[in-house]
Image (cartoon, rainbow over all chains, first blue to last red; front, side, top):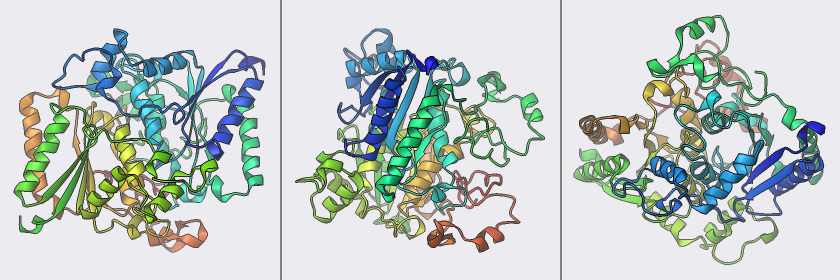
Length: 275
Length: 275
């Protein structure tokens, strides 16, 4: 795959056990991407004993306002002044080099495990990863791609609009829109391994093969659709511009899961590109 | 408030600074609830240096399957055998006594801070907080109430269906449905403090007064609406029973945010009771 040569992929990985299916999925990605000539970096969060909590310890030297410590402001200043904790700087350096970031994890409580949320809270530093001017389609990482790859404990039927857990598209929205798209990443469709513990080892092998096949074309995939930031009017509380709303009037669906405009959600828009 | 006498309220609180608005909101709740005769327990997660990550260290003694450590199964066994880490047991004991749990936090990346996600990942132990048979409306904590109380960095207009961040009802769904309702909690409407750092100190005082007023009637509030677990057919992949789907055909709205049935979302259903 010529066009993947020399690309750098960062895998942020959160499973405690090298014997897990998540580990097998991560290992398959490392092998397949290297085979294609990619440089692969792995942040194995449990192995690194990655600090999950956002505290004053993330700043070397004095904080500016010890009476009212504001994590976002203080870490932005520390980043500007080269006083961020070294484990955050290490992740910044990996992120800067990455063309694609894959988050590999078992879904915990409809979201990422706390250790991975800690990576997001601490590494996506104000200033480095976003500012109020540079976010969403104007975001700092708009030339990078990112995706979620995860296992569930539930079957796919249970995570549908008809299923007991509700629509997976809704569950993914806060992470894919509020973290990845917010920082500007082009968000690739998630790779979801539905309830692998309920499968035979042959069936799990089949899932891994499918994943490897997808990995071969991954960096050429079209990303999910999110609205450009400039359709919202900054002068009016970042509300949708009336002309866009008007143009949308005939559509049977909302723009996205979150920008639903009191219409039905566009089907599978957080799961498939081109929706 | 006679009917709140002798109730126990647990506040799970995640802000680094005693000088923060989140601290003021937490303190106001402690004072107001005590005034009403409630017993108030506070888990001040940063102060406790609460461990956020789900690891083997959460189990005293040997794990059952060291080659493939499965956090859910292993901690369930440890709970049954009295071998869970003492900080988890302490939180279990608070939870058992609580009639109401208030989660107080600044929203980080469209969700709770990692340290609070760690509380959810570690304290809501399989067996203790849920089983596959005892969840949602059959959930273990169905006689308890829970609610989110949080600050945002964004204004309310930005978290609407027309706003740049999308509908807050969608953002809250995975937490309120996937964590709180999943464990059976009756979920009270969230208390949202929109962008308090952009307000004058007088305006912030006003918000605190409003909060105290709400606290006076909090335990009498009707909870948000979630569907009963038995409308999903366990024998058929926990899909909505056809007769329920049929009955729903005439409604202009879906059942909930996640169970939207390809219809518009019921407005404000994660923000207000009775929707």
